Length: 120
Image 1: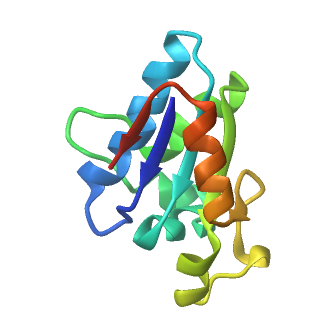
Image 2: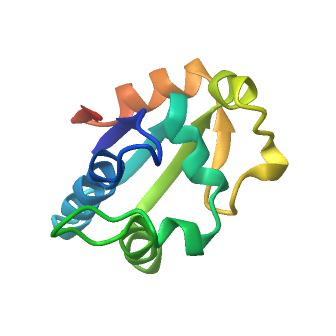
């Protein structure tokens, strides 16, 4: 499953949904990658403590789901849109160890590699 997310911390419910969808792919044994654009680029700069604060009613926090994805080696790639990051003064040095900068060729590659693409 390939997930494109654009929602940042301004909406906890919508922010956690891509991660919950990723967990669903993991439960099915499917490979999974995320491409973060617009405000979602900020998620890759957040310390784990701040990701613990992003919680929607009835759902786990972003940090909990992300930890589970990492523990199960289920997150193939988390790519942050470089132009979107640059517009928000985010550099490669600002990203967490589980994220990397990418551009439109990465978006096109991932769209082609996966059978299913979901956008949030």
